Image (cartoon, rainbow, N blue to C red; front, side, top):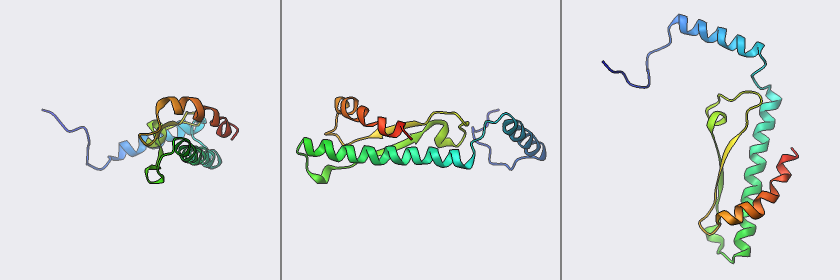
Length: 120
C-alpha cells in the first residue's frame, strides 16, 4: 500500500504537543531569529535586489542595449524561502538577468559591487 507524499488530514493532539515541545527546545537553544534579526535579513535581500537591478541597467547601457530589455530579479530559495532557516543560516539567492548579461559580467563587475551589502 502506498500513500501520497502530502498528508491533508489535520494534525493529531500528539502531533501538536510534540511540535510545541520541539519549538520550546529550539527556543532554548537560541536557534530562532529575533524580529530585529529577521528584519535585517529582509533588508539585506532588498538591498541585494536593488543593487542587482541597478547593475543590470548599468551593464545594459555599457552594451548599448535597448531599455525595453532591462529586467532582472533576485530570488531567495532554500531554507530561508521555506521559512525553516536558523538564526545564523545563510541566504541562498539566485540572480536572474536578461540574456544580454552574461556570466563574465556578473563575476567581474557585480562581484565588486557586493561589498556594499556585506557592510550591512
